[in-house]
Structures are given as structure tokens and as C-alpha cells.
Length: 304
Ligand code: TXA
Ligand code: MG
Image 1 (spheres, rainbow, N blue to C red):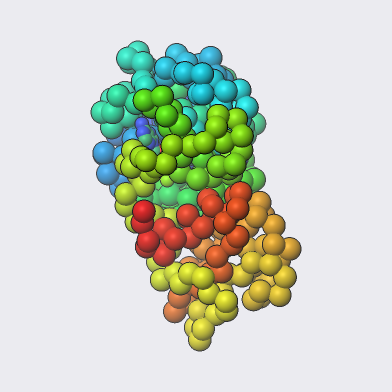
Image 2: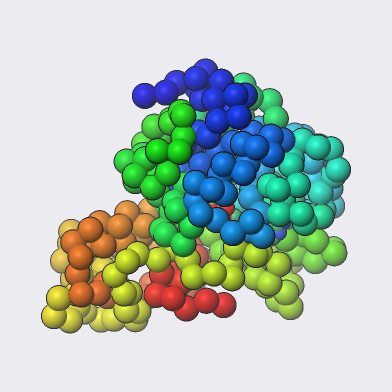
């Protein structure tokens, strides 16, 4: 297994790295090295119009590549390091290649909280792009083994950071044009963001995130939503006490954090059994439930 030094050496050499974060595992490269960034798009089979998140060590480093307004600064101060990504106007520094931004004049930045990710970013010194380490359109990996199975073969170094504590990808918030809008729900909730910066702008929600346009997070087996039990041949992922088999429960106690942490792992494990289908209960929509339901709807092929 790779240590932090080897991980940084791989980035400097223009190679790919399996990088643990508290949300999901990432497939990382030096953001400024277009050749390295191109390897990510190839490994994931990712459309090139879909930009990548730049990960940096702290908010000061973030402001070297992005232009922050007051709302962005408040969000960064409240939630970094942590599972929040901020989309802001980009600074033209060359530290992040055009390819990584898919040619946009905005940039997505994040300061992750995972200790190993932080150690890599501190030692590397520059921005590191890292999409989720799944092949494009598949569920994000939340364990080291799942990350290795998805794209490990393309990486020359891999850091084992244990199971991801959060389990769904970071909340993505745009501060473009002086409006704060939610592009992707995550474990930093709508309610928490609104408490800090006021009501979110709903007009362009989701529209500016190119990666949200495709079918996403999908297992091979068909996913059936809002199920109150499994039909013949289905695996049922329940939520709350007494809902289906304990082994397949998102959370027996009905805890949303636990459900988020289990979600992608259970979808993958269910898929491995080649069931007729995967039936899932929708979880309550409040708080983290918005992110969980968003991923479930996308896994079932509903986009928007
Ligand atoms: O939790 C996470 O965010 C993980 C870990 C590894 O950091 N990363 C992740 O990256 O989920 P990815 O590439 O799978 O998702 C990034 C999302 C995509 O939907 C992409 O379209 C959007 O962020 N995005 C990136 N740059 C953007 C920009 N300039 N404007 C709007 N959306 C952007
Ligand atoms: Mg992804």
C-alpha cells in the first residue's frame, strides 16, 4: 500500500492516485498537468465537457485559483475542511489546466477533511483534481476495495483511507453572478447553507453543473424507488426498524447519516448478487435525506 510520500511523488510524475476523502474515494491528478488530467477522463470514460473539482489544502489556496465573494468566504469558513464544494469565477493562473475546467470560466474548489487527503494536499502544495473514482455513470466508491475495483488499474499509487465516513459526494454550491444556488445536494444540507447565507437561488439550480445531466450512480440491476418491500427476485434496501432484512438496511435505526454512509456500498453489494432488481425505500426528504433521495433517483435513471 502506498504512503503519503509515494502518493505525492505519483502526482508530481503526472500519474494518477486513488485518494480517500471523507465523502467518497477520488481518482486524483496534478490539476496543472493537462496530460495527467487527460488520463482521468480516459480512465473514467468521462465526457470531456464535464469539469473536475480542484482540491486544495485551505481557503487561502482556494482563493489563489477562485474569486470568492462574501458568501463564498462565509461558506468556506463554516464548512471547510469538509464535504462542501464551491463553484466560483476562476482566476487565470495556469495552476488548473483548461481541460480540468472543461473550458469554463468558473472553477469548483474543495478543501476535504480526511486526514490522508489533507496530508497529500499539504505536501503537494498545488491544486489536485479528483472526480469520484468510479467509472463514469457508476456508483461512487466508498471503500478502498471498491475504488481499486473501479479505477485502481489506472492509478500508479493508491492510499487506503478506510471506509468513507460521509458516503455521498460533496454538496456543490455555486456563488456565480452574486447568487448562491445548490448544484448538488450533499451532507452539508440546504438548511445549513441557508442559515448562513440566506435563501438559495432556485432559478438555475442544477443547470450549471454539466455532470448532473447524465444518468448517474447507476448499478447494473434496475432500481425501483419508493418501495415498501421487495418483490420476487429483488433485493430490498430498507430504512428504519423492521424494514426488510437487516443485512440490506440503509439504517436499521432510521439514521440519515448512517444511510448516506451505507448507500453506495449497499447498491454495489446488491448488484453483485445479480438480482432481478433492487427495490429501495425513499428516505425522509429533510436534511441529508435530500442528497440520499437525489442519488437514489439518479440510480433509478431519473435525471433532473
Ligand atoms: O465528494 C466529492 O465531491 C468527490 C470527492 C472525490 O472530492 N468528487 C466528486 O467529483 O464527486 P465528480 O467529478 O464526480 O463530481 C463533480 C461535480 C460534477 O457534477 C461536475 O459537473 C461539477 O461538480 N462541477 C465541476 N466543476 C464545475 C463548474 N465549474 N461548474 C459547475 N459544476 C461543476
Ligand atoms: Mg462522480
